[in-house]
Image: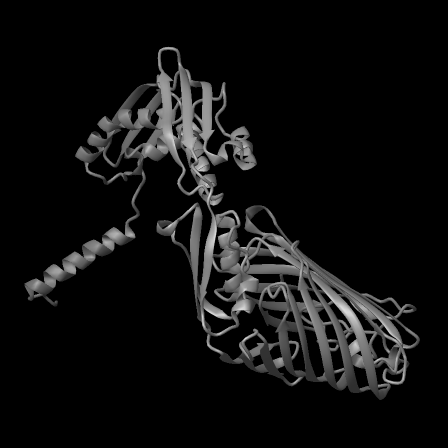
Length: 581
């Protein structure tokens, strides 16, 4: 037998064992009940009651002291909601293992607002925004008294004054008079807005871009009515421009003269050049290497240059683009550039080069439009035909996306339309018209789950689909198409059974996703669709289960899918990263 001979070590072990017992022994909640009230009154009382936060192992003297204080806490909680005549019956009992407290509350008659007088003096007296606010006040004649709503009335008046340029506004009278005997309350508020301010001199401190160009981002101008909304819009515009690391906008209220508020904007520039490198993996295209370069300031007029290279066994691209901000740089941009693309799938091989020009416009309603003109050369080979094609393709795309959370949305949708075409002429080999639609919808379901609906639709009008290079044909299959099938495995086949790409595309997907841990989830899905020609409609279906990791940079998806129709393989694993909206 071994005996512990070190007393210090024995004490340490005893303390550690005691701590361990505390950690593994769950703290039991005592039973605290409140009857006679419900709804907001019950919630407020439970929030104010200190005793209900105590555990079974709390000292008896502490519980008794809190029990004595409970009448005052309950009365205070009910008075905040207009109950000034509450009566309370209570009991406290201790047993061997715990204690129990019961409170029977009779709230009595609630105080009612007898009259509300709100007077606005100063320049805001006839301001439509203030007149509209007064109509929407939460307490009116006949309303039950609610101290929280009374406080919010004052807050709303002061907030609107600051937002609207009444920077020196203040209450000259604030009265809430309560007649307990008659159970009525009188509200009287007087607010003097003072003079309305306007923007004074607007000074921009920066040394990397032309001052005239930077001013295109400003929504505040000297002489305009001072509003916090315009300050926020200017801050957002400068922050989203991509040129500045920090944006500091300050109103100098100490230098106000003749109701003119001077504003100073201090901007610190981002680094001119940015380099990026990445390694990734996508089950559609395999391991991926990426390199990118951005020159944020080619000149003082905000021109910028981007270059990007993606290398993978299936799909590799290299792109450069020179962008020129227009008169409204936050919403309008013109760019030109070029790119190379190499794509080797199980159904075709393609090498293409493209030069392009684009005009991008962001509408106030959230839609983003891109009008483009592409001139491309493509050398392609399928199992049934090959060729080299020159195409001059004008077109446009329109995108709208909205969600309730950029990293982990539970509600939202994304719509994208594209239309393009070409007319046969000496510098373009094929006449065609093509339209494309991509849509996704997320909807939250009970118990934390969400439904994800997705569709892809496309149509091409052309004399013969084999005249078009493979980049302009439709294929299906892969993680963003019909899961359970290889990337671009599906499409109409020639007489020898070789996939050659289609004139039409139609894909539908339904998915249920459910969280299982804080940052993990599982999914079940069914996808159906195909690429086909007008004379050969044939849908393929895949089903499966997936795992979701909601990482700090966006969702990671791992799907296990089975094809229900003829396929190159009997099982597919799909992996991808990034949001869908």
